[in-house]
Amino acid sequence: MPSRASIVTKLVYRPLSNVAAMKEYKMRRGEYLEERMPDLKGSIEEYFGEVTGTEEVNGHELYVVEDPDNPVFQRIVAGAASYDGKKDKLTVHFEERPAEEVIAEGNADAAADAVDVKNEFLLEATGRDAKSRRDSMKRAVEDEAPDY
Image (cartoon, rainbow, N blue to C red; front, top):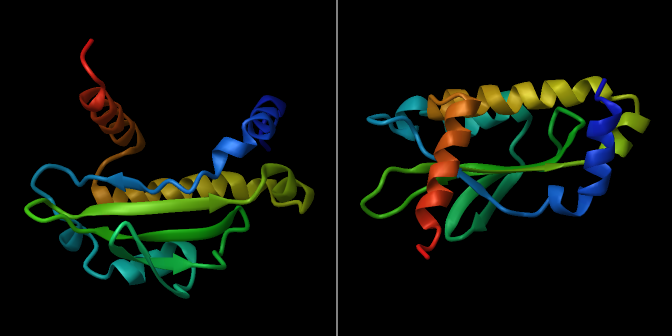
C-alpha cells in the first residue's frame, strides 16, 4: 500500500499529474523500435489491454487503449513517432485515475503493478531501464536550456 506521504503528494499535485504531455523515448544506440517490437500494436495489447482505435498526435498515428486492464490506468496512447532522417521514437501517454479513487475501490495493489507494467513495457521497447531513461531525459532538458 502506498505511504501516506505519497498519497498526500499525489493529492496536492493532482492538477499536474495528468497533463496530456506525450513522452518520447529513444532506443539504445544502434537499435531500432521496429526491431525491438516488430508488432507494436500486439505488444501494447499484451501489456495494457485491447487497442480500441488510433489517434493523431503531433502528426503521428498512435494506438489508443480506452479501457486498460490495470484499473490504475484510465487511458493509454502509445505508438511510434517517425521523424525524417532520424530513428523512430516510442511515444507514450499514460493517463492515470486519481489515487484516492483507485484506493477507495480497493485497488491499491494495482498501483505497484501499474509501475511494473510501465517499466517492463518501456524496457522491452527501448532497451533502457528506468534510470537510463531518466538520465537521458535530464540530458535532453539540459541541452535545450539557454546559455546565460
